[in-house]
Length: 164
Image 1 (cartoon, rainbow, N blue to C red):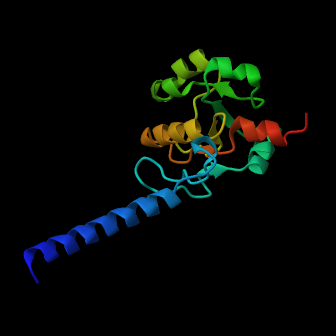
Image 2 (cartoon, rainbow, N blue to C red; image 1 turned 180 degrees about the vertical axis):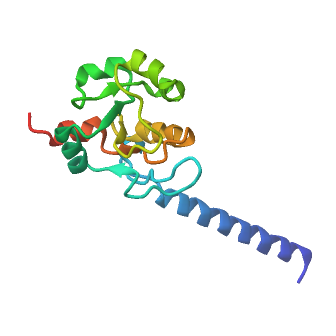
């Protein structure tokens, strides 16, 4: 075989690999937009989320009704005008890291609620659609909140499923 033939077959192989890679990437995307994508299931350290990391609507409803929850809304304050889940404390995503680095007294003074413990399993974060709360969960985990969870459905799902 001549050099030109080797070059062409090498280029064809590269193009085929590239197309295969792009094709695989495209099929892993969500058709209905990132904010409602259910494929956002990896944390920042590339560990897959488990069912222990996510709170369902039914679980959240039970936790809220019994008061057995430390619920944090990571949306911006102006978004609360659309509504919020009862009992939630607002800590905008941009403030999450600083907030959960505060000592317990500073946290209570600033937010009016006790600071969650590092091992608390009733520590739940939510936002509008679940994307920002997943980021907040990653931040909380990085700070040592190993049992923190997030409500992936967000306020949109809550509002849709809650009787008005």
